[in-house]
Length: 254
Picture (spheres, rainbow, N blue to C red):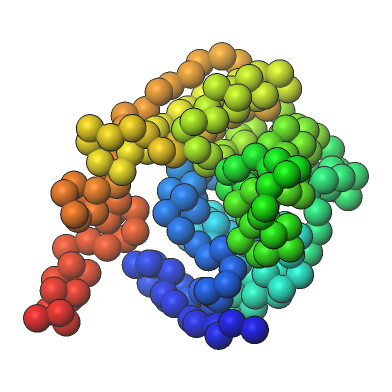
């Protein structure tokens, strides 16, 4: 077993996260997804699909008092996610379940959730691929256990009408994502393209789709991650690394 480490969850005061290097740990896409999701005052119940070690539920707990359920199929990853919730004294708000997204709608009431988030596997799986189907990171990154459409089908049944399904994905699959969401009667409300730097192609996209919602798409301004070799101010704000943090970091490095 790889050695565990306990890290701060970026600049979020008092939030810790247990991680293992052999697993798919929280990254930029999870952070941006949690920031992009907008729980409303009336939001009572949130579902996070493929929760991993639970970074998105942890982030969301700082934005809402709603009950949050995270679903993770991998047993070892699920155990760490549960410990992360307990570590942060959030057992009263967040529940982690060791379950498969496929068929999940049979285990909950129809239209039970006000908001569903998902950081799905980005890469399609080919039968002749050499990837290890049992590897933690492979399952998180490749569609070996579930496809994008299978996720959308489950979300359709679980999400309340006109409530939001928020996801992050690779920009190169955007047309496919739009087609699948439209096929299952989701109205895409917000799209934000993420770029590593100005002048480069977008590599990531954030999408907010409304279940049986009305048309009214907003293409938001681009999100740039880096300016030169440094993070942009917006990214630092999302990380909650403001001027005070930068000063302390500089002081420690000097």
